[in-house]
Image (cartoon, rainbow, N blue to C red):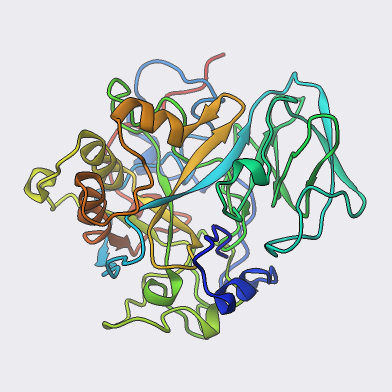
Amino acid sequence: MCFNVYSKLKADVLSLLMIFAMVACNKKSVTNAPPPSNPLQDSFAVEAGTRNPLKWPFAQQSIWNMPIGAKAVYVPAKLEKSTQYGLTFDEDYIVLSPDAPPVEIYENYAGWDRNKSRCDKNGKLLFSAPIPKSFIVSPSTWDGLTPNAGLAVLMSDKRTIRQTQPFAFCDSTKSATSQYIFPDQDIYGPGMYGAHGGSGLSAIGGALRLGELTPASGPIRHALKVNVFGRKNLYYDTETRGCRWPAERADAYAENNYGKDRTSAFVKACRMGALLALPASIKLDSLGFETQPGRILAEAFRNYGAYVVDDTGWDVYAIVTEWSPSGRFADEFQDNWGFSFAEASKNTPWTRDIDRIFLNLHVVDNNTSSTIGGGGKPALPLAPPFAP
């Protein structure tokens, strides 16, 4: 479901976004158990060294950590070029401060109604979680948006991730608020699911994190998350209900919304939860990238791909990024590269690079629970083991 709502959205679109009821994906039930063992994948060497779960979470064969496989079957996604904006972001609130004092989170019923406040305590206590008092996310920080506001917070046991949406913490002297709670995840486990309402996927896995996509960071080593404009780019039928594994669902409005403004032939493989990637057969240098971050991002789309986790609700591409007590990815990007991650113009070097990526994306059509990333030898070594 799209909750990244801009003031320019028409009233009829906004009214749809207030609906949170979801339709289930027509698929076998998927539990939070680890993916089935794959002898081919298990035989490949793990890169030397170890990793910090706070910086690089989840199991080696989590959907967020598995590289694209050599047996991947690609279907052109044929995303239609966005027209209303160059690129935007959807920010995941990622709070990994398990020793912070607990903050109470109470029910708030404003949802995505721009005429109501998310700051008010309207109902029962949902739960308490360790959140630094300095982490203020409120209308004064939303730049005129009504954001998705999915929170992933690491609990005091230092392995349980609790997720909720739409989260607000407007005053450090008062309680925080939210409305919907999602099943707990283990930071050392598969970590597939969470607070992206349109798909049911994680509000931490796949986000561009602080310290990534910088001049000195090197390649991105995990799958990404994107939102696309459902009315143009997502397919719906009664058999699939508009989604595919690993998504748990599509938007409640999918039947009467997905693909309704499409101007070209439908791509049945391109549904909520699709893994989008640049095929290895596309030589990245042939695409003529104009910016270094564009080229780095393209490598991530080639090596790991990106899962469609929400509908943007307007004609724009969105990439999911981190907002945490340590800062906002978008601010760090601006500081490092001297231009905005979310540029309005369709005709800047950065947004031309974004078009070069999104207009060449393919669906990995055989991405399944037993062939994550398409199966076969992964494009890169698996993630390192966790530090002891």
